[in-house]
Length: 290
Ligand code: PAF
Image 1 (tube, protein in one colour):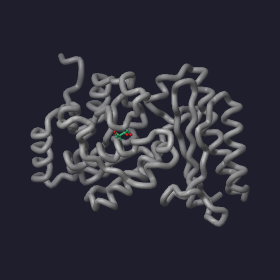
Image 2 (image 1 turned 120 degrees about the vertical axis):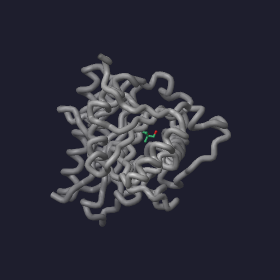
Image 3 (image 1 turned 180 degrees about the vertical axis):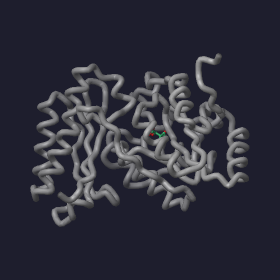
Image 4 (image 1 turned 135 degrees about the vertical axis):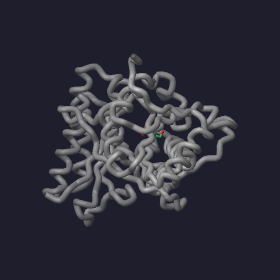
């Protein structure tokens, strides 16, 4: 008896193209769920959403060096392929694409043509992580071209990433429908993330302050509080909880430009980033009308 469920693992481009061609001939709608592995329940939620919208689901697992800065956690980023394959097999995923860096960047990272979404890529997380969203847009564009999915599913936890990808799809007229899925959370409210694995239990409790402050800020906005005041108070409370806040910013959902007093509350999103030790955490909350 094999100790794991069988699942199709594709590593090479010709095999991937062949798999895709067969699905096309069978007139099957294909959904792609791009990931960097170390799958948790948030990723599995994306897969289930993909299964609702398509006949065949392919998950890519690739830790993309182009989206990591020089001093970031590329080398230590958790790689758990066997457990990931098992979880995807249990969900009945049709195929998993696990390319090597040689397949993705055959001429090397520095020689690689890239995709950059201007403005959106430079604000918020992009200020602290220059080049990050260029790396994300480039790999996602490449994965779209390699897999040629009808649909692609991403988590709303990476809200700015999702906005960058949607803009790239529009700007480059890519024939992919992008679906965003609500963030999966711990009981404390902490957004599920592969990087939570770097936190102690005590740090996880402290990190829940980010979501608590997002909720408090949403309530304040709905009650008519001023934007700057809400942002400043939240930054103070996140610092008081023992985190190092990077930004807490109320933005327009459509283009992530700074919110204005006259904006309707339900067109806004609040985005936050903060560090705990060496771990950087992000979260966000779309504001609904009360
Ligand atoms: O969100 C992620 O896991 C990554 O940024 C993505 C979209 C898979 C691109 O590497």
